[in-house]
Structures are given as structure tokens and as C-alpha cells.
Length: 364
Ligand SMILES: [Zn+2]
Image 1 (cartoon, protein in one colour):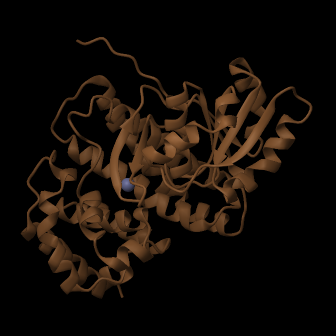
Image 2 (cartoon, rainbow, N blue to C red; image 1 turned 135 degrees about the vertical axis):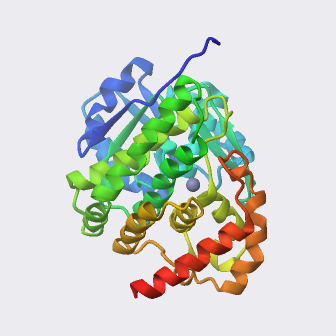
Image 3 (spheres, rainbow, N blue to C red; image 1 turned 120 degrees about the vertical axis):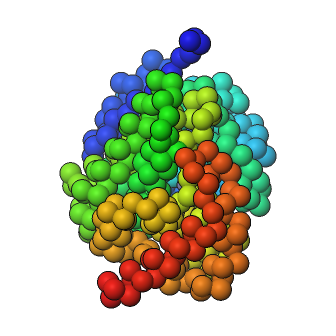
């Protein structure tokens, strides 16, 4: 067996999560620069100010992170004088801001703390940043040895954030469970990978149990128990699963048919412009389950998607059968299903879509 280290996420969650900032951060210094989007920083600032009032900890500047998590932007932010001066970096916001701050922290050799203000993904506690070009085209995942030092998850801020982030985040999160478990089927991987596959159950179960209530509460800006359970599934369960499952990148259990469908569909204008990543992936999971001939689970998830208005038909994604027929041949070649327990064929996909069509007619 090889020698290896695992660095895992640590976090504080709750409406008073920022009250822990001073205690957790003071051993790393007394100053921070905040990197984030303007809206996110505006939402977090009053809480941060209150939490740090009366301490000797100082936030030097609230700095807009740029718009894209690109290597060019990372280099530019890293050269900012507040970034150079600060003892640590506070990443405030969603995925792109957090991923940018993680790269900046690595480049300037300073610890990064994260403050997610929306619950759309696990960027606040993973050891990877998703890199894009300046024009916003996906480039590559950029891996770090360890995740951010600590995530401060203020559920009150998240309860007041726009609902579509959590809504789409739910789809992307439960996909992790289905894709990891199917990819691992019939195999006995190394301990950490196995652990990741097992942990991925927590990316699905809490969502099916609390998802509907959490979205209702998010809509009404109520910071509830259900909301916190969903936030934990989207950030922490997924973060842990991601770190365990991608540690040595082989075997690749990190993706599957749902994401292959997403990447095949993105060239279509409607999809790119009007639909969120997690929303499309949520639909892809239905196709994944039909390809897997797991009809019981399909019916369960179909009912869940319906209950929270996640897509259950190509019409929900503004897609025609003609558009679909054009992209289906590309799905079997997607790298997302290179490691899979069986070959996903075009026939299999056609059959899945026909089944879904019939099922939709029956349900109406
Ligand atoms: Zn995804």
C-alpha cells in the first residue's frame, strides 16, 4: 500500500456561524482580504462586521474577484496590494468567486477561508477549482493538496439568497450519488475511494427527505432545519465525496450518464442560455436511471423532480425531439462514461427517452 495523506473539510454552520471566525482564524494572523462578487460581499459584510466588532482582527478590503475563474484573472488578483498585505483570504460567494480565491491563496501562499452565500455546489470545501478561459469556456479542473482551512456557512444568508441556486444545486448534488455508485458497481476500490462512494448516499437521502421543504423555506426566506440539512448535503456531503473519490483520479467514479447528457446538451443555445447546470443534470439523472433499468428509483426521483419543479421532460428544457436526435450520438463518446459498468449505447438512450415520453403521457 502507498503512503498518502488526506486533508478533509472543516466547517461551522448556522445563523451565527460567523461568530466563530475570530477564534478559528486568529492563529493565522490578524488581517484578511475578502474576495467575492459584489452582491455576495454586500450580503456577508454586515454579519462579518458584527462578528469581528471589538476584536483586533481587521478586514483590509472587500475586493471584487473579477468575473471568471481563469488563470489570467487569478494572476491579476494575486498581484493586488491588499492581497499581498493580508494574512489570509476570505472567499465570499458562490463557486466562481470561491474557486478563484482558492487559486489566489495557493499562488500567494496564504490560507483561504470560505463563506458560501448561496448553496449551489461544494466549492467552499473541495480541493479543486474549475478553471475557465477569460471567455468563460471550461478549461480544466485545478487540484490542490488540501481544501480551504475552514468554511463558515451562514444559513441565514443562504435562506435570503435567490432560490434557483439551491434548486439547481439539489440536482447536481443527488447526481453525485447515482453517478458514483453506478461507476463503482462490482468493484472494490482503495479505502478512500470506497469511503467516497459510501458517503455519496448523503448527497441524495437528505435531499429527497428535506428538499421540498427547504426550497419552500428558501422561497419564504425562512432559516429552517430542513434548509440547513439541504445546505449540508450540497456543500459538505458533496465536498467529502468529491475529495475522497477524486484523490488519485483512478478509477474515475466522479461522473456518469447525467453529466454526459449535460455536456452533450450544452451546445444547444436554449440550454446554455436559459437553464442552469444542476437543472439539466437533474433531468440527466432520470435518463441515467432508465439506461440502468432501475425503474423503481426512476419513479421515486421522477416524483421528487415533479414535486420541486425540476425537469421531467425534454419540454421542460425547451428541447425538441429533433434537437435531441442530433446530440444523442455524441453521448456515448463523453469522457464522463469512460469508466462505467457497461457501454452506454445510442439505442439505450433512445429507449430511455421513449420510455420517459410514455411515462409522461401516463402521468399527465
Ligand atoms: Zn455537476
